Image (cartoon, rainbow, N blue to C red):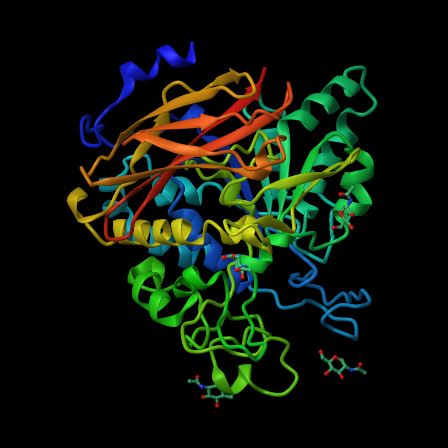
Length: 505
Ligand SMILES: *[C@@H]1O[C@H](CO)[C@@H](O)[C@H](O)[C@H]1NC(C)=O
Ligand SMILES: *[C@@H]1O[C@H](CO)[C@@H](O)[C@H](O)[C@H]1NC(C)=O
Ligand SMILES: *[C@@H]1O[C@H](CO)[C@@H](O)[C@H](O)[C@H]1NC(C)=O
Ligand SMILES: *[C@@H]1O[C@H](CO)[C@@H](O)[C@H](O)[C@H]1NC(C)=O
């Protein structure tokens, strides 16, 4: 089978120009963002909102966390040990419930007419505004009452849309926990409960930017053990707070340092109505309500006792919460139905099956063969950063030709490929680019995604084809993962991928 197909398929780089097309709504990943609106959440939302053309955003919900809670407005004092405060408080670093509506979505509305030129699937600011709700915000871990936010999540979990509902936790998991508890309170005494709990546990996936309150451990894990939860704390190596530890700004790998420097961020990200909301070191910005947001001011940020020392002006500060949606971006690589596959969000391993918890791997094997900590997310920095910059340009360019748009790449004889040990598998890809850019195609083995433990030779056989020699010592049932990667030559080069998993017969 495999050998007969490639003849049909050697398609020239520029042969077919496919007009940019939008993904139909029902094919998009369905998701809810819950956020404590720290300044790094705002920065993450700046990135997120540029991807709303590809995701079905069902909610953007304020929630509390151990770092941010609103208080009850009656002066009730609250205290938990080992927090940033050491006496009881009436609220903590709370940044309010208007920033998304009054700041982020207003900026989005300004650039929306331009974004639409580049993809008509972008939702209107009004549409997104209708998804903004206030969840459980009163204290850390508060899940005492139903809120607009928890009710929205509850209704999405109970509706008849069969798609997976990806619930992102950028702060605490408390609003999500409240929604689950409310469902349990209402239905656990009914006959259908077992079936309902099973179907909700299959429908929901929690993507957590670490656990920022106790509600996962205390409520979700013991009561919803079949609900898949993924913890992305390891990705902070790449995207979390970038503090000066005496070596200067050395975030990411040497080849990708540039994307974390002030020069690059100031020129390419902190531009235009939306980009200027992004946050970087010493950029003069401050979030009202958060007394520990001193990152914009050198005097305050370098004062004795601050936990994160400043880097240079506009250097990368933190965008800790994109870790929760990177797995959902549609580059051809990420497959959120299977966290064991890698991609811009990193590759995860099952940590425990009941409760079902996945965590990112700590390291992966770099091209030179050494195990590198954080490589599972660091390896995609150039591609992810260029795409962020290209999308920021969409918001500024009123003509389609003024922006760069991603190429498309598909392995045409992929799917379920089976081959014997020693056999050579020929693969072919169809490649196109909506801007008629030249596209560079490369093929490589994603070593850790396969169960065959060794390196496999992946060679090119023509411009868009590759031959993969299944090693003679490969055993029946082992798998080899091969990625094709296509990068255009636009101002901010854009990359798309496809994958084939070869199973040894
Ligand atoms: C309380 O916390 C502050 C920092 O938030 C610290 O400066 C201070 O020393 C602490 N006080 C006590 C009594 O631990
Ligand atoms: C930084 O903070 C200091 C101390 O509060 C203040 O005096 C100064 O004006 C601030 N600098 C800027 C540029 O806002
Ligand atoms: C689960 O995660 C914890 C924390 O990262 C780690 O110490 C432990 O080894 C993991 N267990 C498994 C089975 O992966
Ligand atoms: C191998 O490559 C990684 C990633 O580029 C790098 O961090 C590491 O220092 C390299 N190791 C050696 C021994 O060259």
